Length: 103
Image (tube, rainbow, N blue to C red):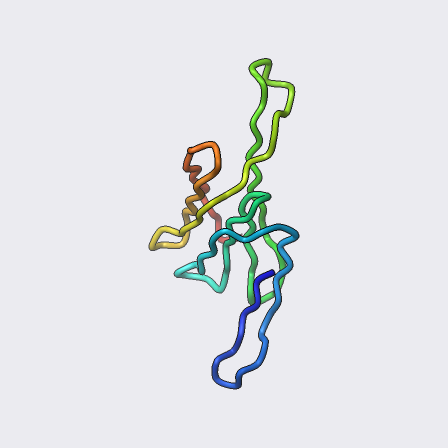
């Protein structure tokens, strides 16, 4: 669970239930968004509307391309300086790059 506090009045602003362990998180540099690397993948919230707006959950398949072996955990997440690309490092050793649209 992620808890975001308002420092000025020492009050809880928002509580995000991730349903899994959190390994890393990063605020967007251009929008009021938060991305979290979790054991279930990457989750992105719009903090203005307090809604989960996207989830990235890559999966690993067997050589036949049909049989799902497992879902991957995300270990780290970061935004580029424009806030339109999200990078996620996963337990398979790959970094995945996601283009983020304004919507």
